[in-house]
Length: 271
Image 1 (cartoon, one colour):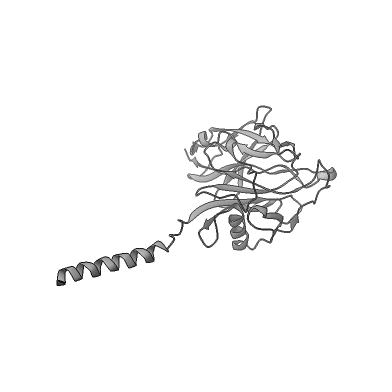
Image 2: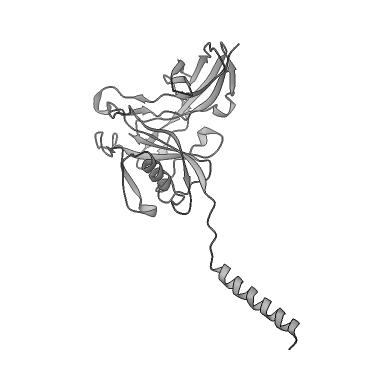
């Protein structure tokens, strides 16, 4: 056998060995970044907002489920979390000491933790998953809300014109915001209202650096609020959002009447 043939056979055998070795290696999925926020009832030290918009990175080690994102966020921020089961049977019963059933446990008022995921540009497509957080797979860029709901009473809120709100407004100009919300009409059958105009909601313009409220307005019967951009000494980074609103009396006292919306970044420019 010539040296060239031996060399070719050796190269072929090495290729076979390498191919066999590589076939057993499963390449890991790319890490993704998602945003998590947690809104509870107002009886705690955080006045309802347990965690504002916080980004976490998920990878093969953490897993890519909604529960993995919640667990990572709670671990990072030292927030207590109680859950049972795994995978499709994962059940979250308590976050930051706020445990299910705090409000009167009957068909109208039974309360506990729910999650929603905003994946598309239109906030009224915000999804209420019908599967456990341990079985729901997150995608890069997803925004996830955990909120302590009294399902038949707590409105889930969004700025429906989020995508069309501008990024820059001169001082003295008007910023139009439309607020819509939905809640359960039938808890047992998982039936929701559509996203309806929400009146009486407070829309806030806050300074991005410290959360200081610079201006606010209340929505009318059509869900519209108009905020006048305040005078600023220099261009100022801000954000818009709909405030949490809580029940203030009766069996639902301190419970979420409607949930704080996601923030929209805007800049107020000095004239």
